Amino acid sequence: MIRSRVFFAVSFLFLFITFITYTFVDFREREDKAYELYQSESYLKILGLYQEKEIPSSELELTILSETISQLEKKLNEKETTKELQSFFQTRPGTKLVEWETTRGTYYHIEDPYLSNLKKHGDGYKRALITKIVTVTKPIPKSEVTNLLLKLILEDPRGMEDRFSRALTNLLSFPFEPIGEIESEFLLQSLHFLANTANTNLSHQTAIVRGKNVNLRSGPGRENSELGKISEPEQAICLEEDAGTETIAGSLGHWRRCYFPNLQKSAWLFSGFLTEVPPNPTLIAEFEKRFKSVDNEIRIDFEGWNGNQIPATFFGDYIPRDSIRISGETGFPIYGLTKESKRLQRICKKLSGDKNYFEFSFQPTDSDLPILFLELHLNYDNLDHLAYSISLDKESIWVNKNRYVLDGEKRRENLSLHIGSRKGDKWNASLWRRNTGLIQSIRSLPMDESALQAGRYSWEICLPLAKEPNREKVILFDIRTGIH
Image (tube, rainbow, N blue to C red):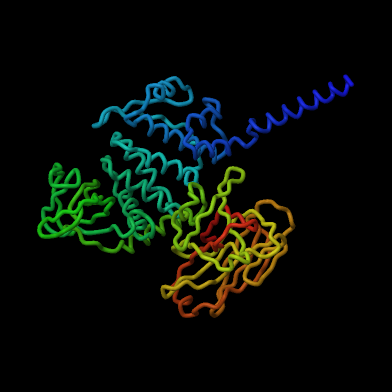
């Protein structure tokens, strides 16, 4: 009896310890913990996951740490900042706190040891740099603005146009030191490319000044100090608009803050003295040529995507859905159709320039029926035309009606569709896994041969959306496209 009681007590204690361990001990990967803490704005707790002078090797962790430093720098410069936060960085060996004296008092800057360890031109580096820029909310020294501006305009914004556009808008609101002729041209190319991109705050914001000796002001309204005068046909890229309306010289309009490339500064002027013009196609072509020679690849991922809003740079009929986090990466779930949900909606992303491969990374599905998870469209005559549809079931991948049986392992896959020669009204493609061809001679659906021959088309990537989430799904992580 005593032995049985002892055995019962020991067993109960073991089960209790096991329960407590699994309830209160977090066994997730450190980068997953860091990501969740960043989403909840628990920035100091993120730093607590790492040794004070530790530089992780993971790009994702470096990105989160760099963005964390930027967010904490923003908090340091808010009115309600605490002395405790200043003291924390003054005594932390892994970072250095610098005080800049500016026109609006002291600006507290945290030197970031993580950004320089990120791969230049990589997505993590670009995200961290953009976060660093958009979290600057009051003036910093001109030399620091210039430094950030020169870094930003060397990066390819394609794939994150909206965030890049907001960063550039914020940066150009501050005075900066004059930049060289080549750098000015790069900046102008990026501005016109973004002005030609839908769903960015710079879309269709190119204009020219009309009138002579138009006043530029420090704020929206004639009560603000004058910064100079400008005359037609000076170029302008408008960055923001004041909500209030006003009538000046018989015109009803708004005050707008615009960047003037020839002056290399931004200022406010009344919209009645502006005429909207389309973005410059020559500058856009030079932009695309510049990045084609450096790195023609475009990567689309879902980092920073809020499930309640359409992913950045996509357009279409979006249905909100929760993101899925696997091994530190955000996946976009694409659900199969059910009896209740027999119709699909689509969100798409327009692509510029030539493309001859599309690489996609996904988590396999357990579905018995094929789930359509990716479509490639050609756009011509202002209409979308389906070229290739890609579906997945638990055994196979389908490209149009061509099937390849996968090996059955439920690991993450990276496959690519290579667009080859064109014959008549159809493209010919092949499906690859790294250097291994899986399916050859995959014909596209018929297209307009004259449009293809004349090059009057562009590619679009579309994601099908079932109306209701369900258990049958494919998780898409990223898409890469470019020219080999």
